[in-house]
Image (cartoon, rainbow, N blue to C red):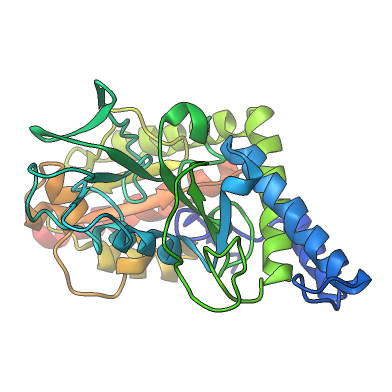
Length: 355
């Protein structure tokens, strides 16, 4: 049975460009911190990737701090002025939400607004609101802006500089790069405490010998993602997403499409069938040959309240019936039509059992 992969928000398939760059980098023997020719060759790969990532994100290369992924990058939220709060949007990813701290807000100064630009579970795009040089959080204002652009970058136009953000996080494997590589973007002129102490790599901001092969793959994936974005590839993906939702809507009356009335990422569809557990749907679709999810990959398999969906107004019982389908540039119309057929077949069985 041929498998159909529709879980791009969890991880994108490795791009050929990234694979080739990583294989080539494995033959570069030097340590990037060494000054001899072999070390300089390794350093060259790291710095080329830094420039490639910076070009995709619309920032300066020196603003890119390579990390093991977006979760490590998000951990810099711990490094903030004493007494200042990190005010996290209710729909933020768990790697950002883990650092929330509302104590003392809105008093004091130096507060950071942390939020996701494109939601991993629903695809809804949330733009930060600026007020007199500060960032609105509820009834209060924050001085700093921290953006999670993991799902958005490479799929919609984004520039770190025009966003006004002070910090941003990005992950290679969402772009078709390797797992275990990511970056923290720090606006030029801002000093941060080291995320990891040691040999002083990454200008002293993240010590540890760089993962040259993963970083090279990250850079290659970033360049390929920028090419796809400029060529309008994601507009074609959005058309497939619409075919998916129209097909499902024509076959059912009780399914809710979350965020359909809002601006969304072009590849993401989250829909809810109250009473039909999302985890059950995932297993049924898996048996039918389709890889989908019931939410963020980091939350799968854990018993927890569907925080993002309840924050958007769904009651908890309904939110437990959510399924997320996320597409990519290699998704075909045949894949979508096959999923619609398989899902609606199971949906009819669910309705029959519930009657």
